[in-house]
Image (cartoon, rainbow, N blue to C red):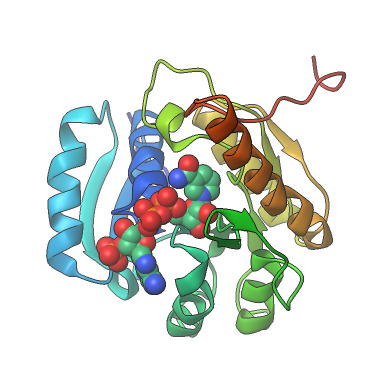
Length: 217
Ligand SMILES: NC(=O)c1ccc[n+]([C@@H]2O[C@H](COP(=O)([O-])OP(=O)(O)OC[C@H]3O[C@@H](n4cnc5c(N)ncnc54)[C@H](OP(=O)(O)O)[C@@H]3O)[C@@H](O)[C@H]2O)c1
């Protein structure tokens, strides 16, 4: 399959990042797994390789990973979010940032001072690159299983062109993607994950996700 673009996954050694790499690989994308530790990134790549059905994959430090990327997925816990965006600032011009981060404290959602994680990234980057929120409500367990059906994805951003491009990527990985509105909607979409975490615990599941009905059926 022809490689058309490169996606760096910052925090790609984690649950969501690894699962996303499997899905992106199947769609023929080049993936760069980023980590705070280059060796950990390389090990993650070796672990992921047997699950990849296509694409190319490499592992390196987060700053090195974003260098050659067209899209930069932020997949770190909220505790490291602001610092990570701050550290990457200056290297993101010409790229699209995909923010998956949910502000959680011990599994419970909260609204951060900027209004949402997405808006926090926007504030820090100050126009250097568009930030698009996506994938908050999917299950990493389902994402890592190419045969599992995925929940729907709400994609939100202030930059319409970037939002459209990210929507296309989400469709390539096998999910239905919907325009979730501007960045101002992100706190709702991010917070919904807190409810999904509650549901997963209550009903003993790892597959909780959302489905939009009545639109695009
Ligand atoms: N898991 C899901 O199902 C899911 C679904 C939707 C959205 N999300 C969101 O996706 C993000 C990642 O979730 P996850 O479950 O993949 O998290 P995770 O496995 O706990 O962490 C992901 C990676 O982030 C890096 N990291 C950890 N703490 C950090 C810090 N303080 N600063 C910088 N980097 C740090 C680690 O990589 P290195 O040690 O290699 O640097 C780690 O492997 C979260 O914000 C979460 O809310 C998760």
